[in-house]
Length: 307
Image 1 (tube, rainbow, N blue to C red):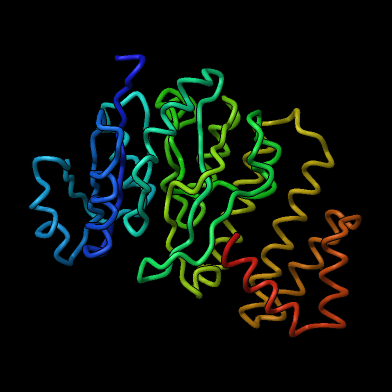
Image 2 (cartoon, rainbow, N blue to C red):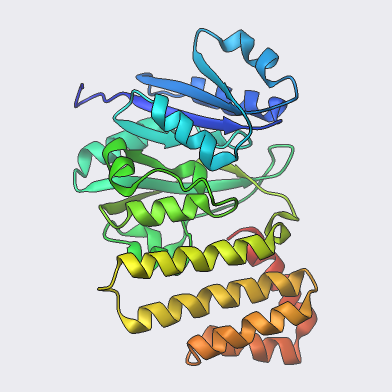
């Protein structure tokens, strides 16, 4: 391995997104960092993905598999990756030209860091930039598991990580449908420090309905991940556990409110209060709900969409 110019494997899982997949691939081909490979894992597409990718056959390693979900596709990519550094890019997202170069340089400069992520642009279906964001807790390098368990503040296409920590943490849990990325970053954060670059180097595509999809599945998976995390990390404080459960119940309550499922919203909100009744945010949401419901919906709609 060239320690000053390590080989990077960029893994792109895709399913029936041929037109967007081309944009994702081209954004990797345009990288200023050239010592990399692109592994495109087609998770059983029935559209023209294979045909449209044929023009890149000399530069992209195309692997077809039966449909098994995005975590399964990522694991196939990992299994076939030759790089000591791994990057993940979903097929509807894109990289800025210096994404890999700056991420690799960061890892080389900070040998105690095993995973680095960056700020991201939020884009719509037509690639228009809507906003960009870097969560405030990201801006200092360090051990982040007790922050990451509160909230998945890592935007998926911004990840670059050392392969050895993926192997230590275990690969993606293929039973998870919605939350597999958070579960993976959380497990990696138990083995290494996490760093960040406060520059938007990826483009993350969102839609107005993205936060409403699969809410029941998201809820089930979220609390499964929390239970497993606290089993593995008995050193984490009791109050960290209570606060994290409360924070996720509140997040689900906010989503159900926007979906206008008020019964489930109330159920999740009560659980948030029971787990940690001292949260100013939880109490504030209740007061907002009582006195300014319409305003609350507008604020939450934007906050959740760009979280």
